[in-house]
Amino acid sequence: MKQTSHFLIGAASSGGGKTTFTTGLLRLFRDRGLNVQPYKCGPDYIDTKYHEMAAGNTSVNLDLWLSSQKHVKETYAKYAAAMDVCVTEGVMGLFDGFDGMEGSSAAIAALLNIPVVLVINAKSTSYTVAPILYGFKYFNPSVRLAGVVFNQVASERHYSFLQKACEDVGVECFGFLPRLKELEVPSRHLGLTLDASYQFDKFASVVAQAIEEHVAVDRILEVCSVPLVDYNAHTSISSTEISKGIFSEKKWKIAVAQDAAFNFIYRENLARLQELGTVTFFSPMSDEHLPDCDLVYLPGGYPEFFLKELESNIAIKQQLKMYVESGGRLLAECGGMMYLCDSIRGMDGKQYVMVGLLHQRATMENMKLRLGYRTLRIGEQVWKGHEFHYSSIEKELPSIAEVTDAKGNPVSTPLYRYKNLIAGYTHLYWGEMNLMKLWE
Image 1 (cartoon, rainbow, N blue to C red):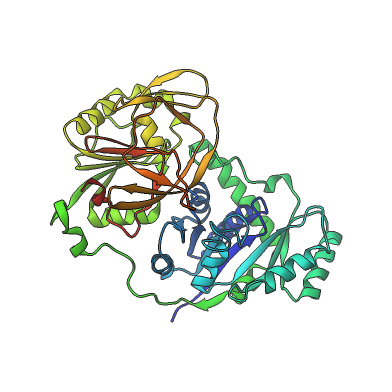
Image 2 (image 1 turned 60 degrees about the horizontal axis):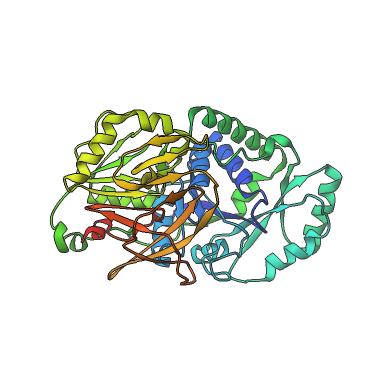
């Protein structure tokens, strides 16, 4: 059985340095010629973009609220099979889940039986990290703490106090990241344009160099080297499932929007689409023609940064409108849904004309964050997803779904339908479902 190093990078809270350390470590492994597979706990799209730029391999989301334990295990194993190193970045604090520890990074580490490398922000503290480490070591026996890396370390003297705390608690110290301005993660709006990609690439290399100098990377690989658990065949939609209902024995032609404006796509969602048929990517920003298709997927992204380009590409807007008006199936999420509205008011206060299939207006004015897990009930169907956006809709259309949060509380997040167009703010996850059932 193949020996691979597997570990999850956790922290005491958001802002502890998980993304900085993960990014640098992925780049360092890549520079060493190792084939490294990144994963991200939770529904985040932006960290996975960072991972891909740093590692050169597509990052995969692992989420115990959006999907089953079986799916998480099979998905992890499928992408880990040919890798030298597997690095999973946690979300929030290690034990923070949607209900206590449920759905947390710790729960995923325990489920997959992979050790945790803890990143602790040591700014303005020293020996006090001892009881913190003691708690992480003993709080839950199902979560194995491999060791710790300290972030924001001011000096070698500061580090010596932290090392003493580790010795007294019995937690291995792998090293530290110094307190440097260059090691601060760039804006989370970066990573989506060529200029931003260049900035992030430079950042990843700087962090990788700091890790090489101050962290015992080879020791991490040694401590975390374990056989890959065989979870058998990966999750897929069976031919029996596909043949049910109105979609029997059909290979679908699927057009997926993918460019700087639209790129928030779960890896396993794409895998399911590829099993259903042939996937062709297109750009609503620059392409003149919609691919020949019988399903269009407009994922989320950042259309608000490219409103002039989207408005000026009249040809693709007209073709999308004709496609839907003639009965074509289309799923649009968040930014994709905004694009289908009559217009979007940008952060500059100007209104830009969009596709005009949903007769409502999206706006970036008075921005307010709306986020959280969502359950959508459409008749007898139940779908899960995640909502994260700052924009809002003016004079919105009626919803076809009853929507609740992770606790079952009603949420006023609509799901719209016009002919065979289905759209809303929620990013749906169908990694272990047949998306085509939405139209049954």
